[in-house]
Length: 263
Ligand code: HEM
Image 1: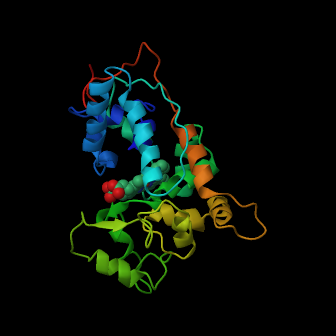
Image 2: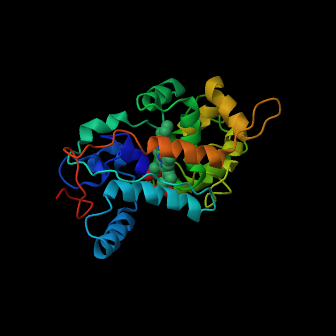
């Protein structure tokens, strides 16, 4: 949610606003969930200290807390963001899509000052959570006319498992772990899965097939001959970088009383 917020109008809680044609209503955001968790945090904060903590800060803090709760790293979240007053569905095409090439993914991240390492690191956020079948089922059936018909970048031994989870005519909304075997733990096994052809989203698996991103995956995996990188440490760093995108100045921002509406 924090990522989808920061890439549209900056980290200003614009993703939380209700209304006709707000960001929330757009395709890339329709899968977001957990709004009630943010509302609950806001209610408790307003009861204790009214008008102090913005909804944008709550999103940044909640993202960090999700990582801590799944046994990942802790980091200090800079605070003081202001909430915006503008939210437009039409601006959500800044967000990367699950079929985007690495070139496109890089361009979309670069637009916000995030480099290739930040891209690989932040997509590593898929070490927790799930995806609906609708975002990857097309990879499993009639993707090619050769072999088993599945996307050839999927490990052939993994295809039957995914087909069992997402049958061709089954429920498109059914949820499947993005990091098979370790979806509740914030660790680097997401990258091990990519190496083994066990990525769920096409955009994730491409991090391994493209040379420029593969080297960062390999560094997270501690491949010999390459300078090792600690995924959790880098994740904290890249998140702080992402969490400062496009911050609102006092004339364009406020501290909302409720997160789903401007004051
Ligand atoms: C190329 C960039 C990215 C693409 C294309 C992408 C795409 C997706 C898709 C399609 C889903 C499944 C959504 C659903 O079923 O409703 C998902 C889930 C998720 N993504 Fe990403 N994502 C990207 C980057 C990121 C980043 C940078 C983060 C965090 C720093 C992130 C965190 C998550 C999380 C936590 C989930 C699980 C949500 C849940 O369980 O409800 N993603 N992503």
